[in-house]
Length: 213
Length: 159
Image 1: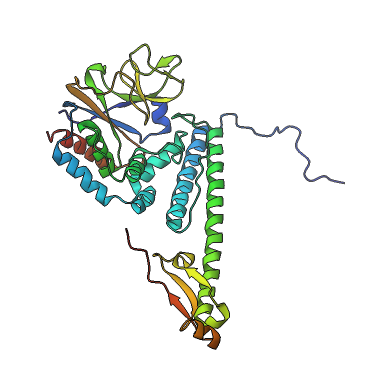
Image 2: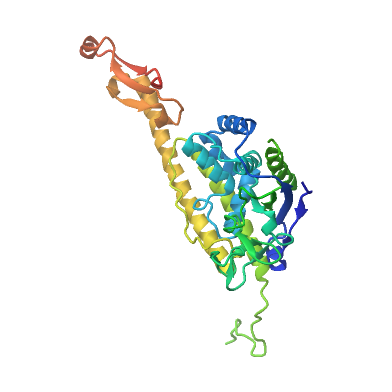
């Protein structure tokens, strides 16, 4: 595992959002079924997480910061939920946090415990460092020719070559972690107003969970 | 006659073409953050007794850097939504106040409110109980005018 690194932010974006940050780190881990300890941890977390908390969450500093940032970049958080609210909603719908697999569970644990979302990429398909920039004309998500188009001006998480995900969106097809992935690149977006220690905690929670096998 | 507000022909009105739009956008973002906080407070205050329909303002243009106009539109939409939510809360507050007065009157003069029924939720209280004005000793109480307020025993047992 490497230390978390600060990603680059396009100067135009940095001028508008001087406190926006992207953090990433590399972890040698494989996706596989969750070990019983992690499933148990999710079950305990489900018991602590109720409807009232899901409603009151929007007043807590970190989820609130993401809600505000969503509005600042043109996303209505009552339409497209922030990651923590999406996790809360899924918890209420399914009656608990459902275990899907080691990586999905680790990412879920990080967002529920800290309010900060974390995503994972297959490190072998990432070229250089990660950063945030507006998409240019005629760009696609990912390196595959069949990757979806990105509208020019959309904020994307990109490596040195191509956009790998829309900001707060799913990672590009073919760039996610698969059964054969041996090294993952975890990244997190620190919205303005979110203390750095929460992001650090989210990345640490995720790597620690990936390490439980 | 002297016209006091006549303009000086030599002085053209000053128009700064280099308006600092970044500062204006920053101010709008601060306003949006404040409105979002107030909206969150209103939503949490309403829970769980008042059901609020938070319809998205629409747009859905994906993550991007908003122009001054877009930020203004968003600020206005948020302000309108907050106004609607506060309206709902206000009318709910007035309704609860009316119900509390009714409850006090029921307790003072049950005879005047025969068979009236008020749920705990109607006066913004948790639980499932209800106050009901009922005759003491059934038919005998009805004929004798013996009325009382009974509070039901609470939530039904889980099956």
